[in-house]
Image 1 (cartoon, rainbow, N blue to C red):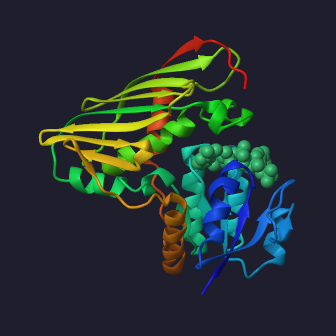
Image 2 (image 1 turned 60 degrees about the horizontal axis):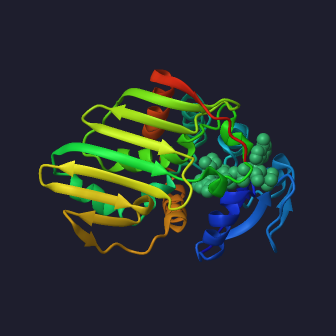
Length: 303
Ligand code: NAP
């Protein structure tokens, strides 16, 4: 049976990933969209979220694809209306607001799923499994991409709550927190803020246990999304955002990449059992980086 779902915020990630994943799935029917100005061909669209909630009681699942700052009010209203809710990453603008949503979901007896799409990359589970019984001696993240390519004209990423380079960096942290056998914590951070912006364009992080990370949004040409973990038993490299895996120099065969279809599979099983999945550990690292971060001003940035 196909479950009707509503997508809210028809922007880049909705069009690139959510709509294709839902339209290709036999388990879901994209039954409505809510957008201030956009539509998806053949799908009933609303400009008013309250009207959609009132007029479409058969839609029990809402997937929120808005940026983090405006997302909370939509999530709160959806939970209050007894709907299951799926949050894009990062799950909110603040940790406390996501904890509030988790409590509201529990009180309403519905599901809240704080998604981390990078955790669904096809090499991640094998990496987690291999590392689970190893002694990690160090790890390094290199996450360097071109903000103009992935967030064209999206000024919200440089506004308070937009997280700057942590918007992609949190994807790396979502993988790191999934695959390391023991948790680590931030010891220091260097944050590079463009002179005309409110969030960093690059960051260097030093964690406990010899774990380091470099995030940079100024990378033109080839893009780098790599996590290297060294253990007493050899080195593991997750590359291409987690979709290729090398263990002790040997390329490991992993399945096809299906991050967003896998998120929707997980949402289906969470909603069926009315359980929530809210892991804030990647966002705690981001928050701690801002708490401990040493600020450096770098060249002004324009799209
Ligand atoms: P986006 O295209 O800039 O915005 C998404 C949509 O959110 C907009 O098109 C708009 O929808 C709605 N929106 C924006 N500001 C709003 C406001 N103040 N009030 C109400 N609605 C508002 O952003 P995006 O790239 O899709 O990113 C959205 C989320 O997905 C972020 O949390 C991001 O981290 C995550 N994500 C992005 C990517 C990527 O490659 N860009 C990849 C993975 C995850 P309408 O125009 O329909 O009203």
